[in-house]
Amino acid sequence: MSRTLAFLGLGAMGWPMAAQLARHTKETGGRTLVWNRTQAKADAHAREFGSEAAALPEVAAADVIFSCLPTSAEVDEVLTALGGQLRAGAVWVDCTSGQPEAARRQAAGLAGRGVAFLDAPVSGGPGGAAAGKLTVMVGGDTAVLERVRADLAFAAKVVHVGDVGAGFAVKAINNTLMAVNMWAAGEGLAALARTGVDLHAALDVINASSGRSYPTEALIPQRVLTREFPVTFQLGLLAKDAGIAAEVVQDARASAPVLTQVAALYRAAAHSIGAEADYSAALKLVEQMNGTEIK
Image (cartoon, rainbow, N blue to C red):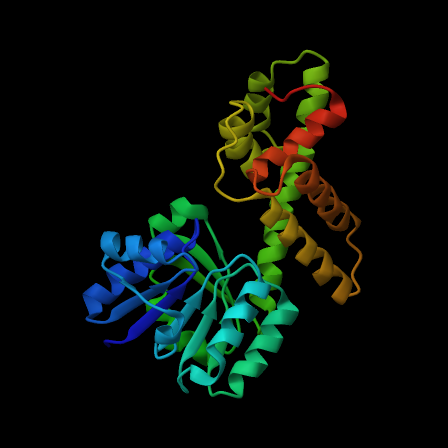
């Protein structure tokens, strides 16, 4: 079925995700509108992928609007700017790593305009987005999800996880679990470095044993040991996600001392190392604490 999709936010994830939508609508005879605060970036996307750069009011007529912005606050700003321009019957799919409370509030506000809302954050990184192999965790009405499932061209796996806000909650906990693994591995490797152990050999053992994780298998060998720290996901955004996870714990009146402590550690790392650094650079704070480099 031919219809118009819109994608708001062409950052590290949004750029390739919108490219997948553009390919999808070319095949179905529809259109993909793209918007970014920096107009030049939307123009460049249109030239490269055949999407259509649009002003914010123009996206209000789309059948499905995707957003992938830094935080829920930016989504609020866009919703305020659009006001009552959104078309009744449309679906807003927010792929931002946002706050569950914000999702519930935004969904209620959009419902008053006849617009359905799904919180649908993604996992898989820019590489997964470029390959169309992201995992999407969706909160909201299952009937609404079925209305847009075919448009999730950037996804290889789509999982409905609960009511509105549940997608954001799962995303925050997922990212924080990765942060726990990375921080713990950094502490262990720093201790080994201080004793003179070859860290490449140590990781070879760990990654063939029960201590392995995504950070030990990929992030630390490729970014930390090499001292490259390429920026693919900003440390400040991971600190934000860990903070949301801490809010989820608090709202649930749960006990999660490790998760809440890690949220504080990543907040400190973002202040100390720089919020715009790559998230793997959080281990530079571990290095400072131990007076040694993980290399």
